[in-house]
Image (cartoon, rainbow, N blue to C red; front, side):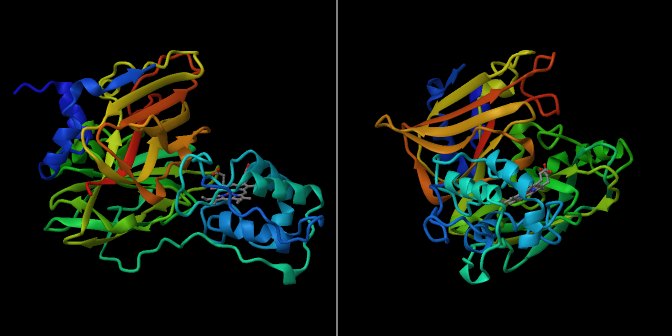
Length: 441
Ligand code: HEC
């Protein structure tokens, strides 16, 4: 049987491995069906202050800060300063008002109204207005007796750690550059296949580690990656939008972590298969303030089982021709360039989380499912893309993609540079990649 390359790639993009063959062959059984085309509901808005009274720290603002800010703005947290007490907050109040009204903080990029996600730390329009109003009114402290309870995001720690994978040596972070993207191949040490059921990234230098993506790579790449690592005499190798010179068909994500992303167990009892002899490539993004120096030897803790009820995998979704360098042109000097891709499903899946990936020129992106009845189900939409704040958004309730549904992805870029840009994994290249955590049931 002749299978053209494009279909093969789509099969692989569909996570096609021997054990999932039955599923994936049907994902691609409608080769003609793909076409390319050029927050959660508001959280409580009631305030603690009596109607007509000005908002106060204790009654109105403090619980929002506990729910949406202190997870990062705490002692030892990723953010550069603490926002715990009234005094902390008061000292920064104008800046805070600016950041929240511009929706730069908290860094939750999924637009309101697309889907309902777990552990949503975003602020609703009403909550933002309230904070701004409070600051405009001189940010009064109010009475501590009026304090409302915040709901801090879950700690995201694993209850049971079965295995910890640590960067092989302490890496001297290149702090002469603001951003240092480095990939570290690490042997997956187990001798039998297991299902990873949860993970917890443990950045050694929380002030330097900006994000971590863990890729699963076949062991056959071990020697090639070792050669690459030897090139500049430091551990690891430079990489940016992916795990380096590894065919897109051979790499899959185990997980991605950005500061603030909730970790811990995968949702809904899922486990992702790791084969004996596989490699992990840990892609670290270090982001350093001027004057910071030092080494990092971060680790990831895992829990795993030898069998799980639901095997899950992270399924990338994109146009095969983009990956081959065709059809995703982002011409020099053009703003608002949009490309989209649609695939009609030949099989059904359950999806548990959604994620988008672009690089630095990305502006907006959207992944959705067109249903048979003409309605649309939004999975993830981001309208102020920021490479630094990538994470998976876990649905409150798993969603279904059914046979005949149209899975769609679109991305928009601004290219103010004088170079044409297309798909690639370098800092100057772009991607438009969706991914979902999926299971067959
Ligand atoms: C996911 C982690 C995280 C959360 C949650 C978070 N911040 Fe931040 N915040 C950061 C980081 C990291 C920085 C440093 C700047 C950067 O890396 O973008 C920052 C910077 C800031 C700044 C300074 C911006 C500047 O221009 O230097 C303010 C003000 C701020 N945060 C306020 C808030 C407020 C208010 C909340 C809650 C409503 C919040 N942050 C929630 C991580 C977070």
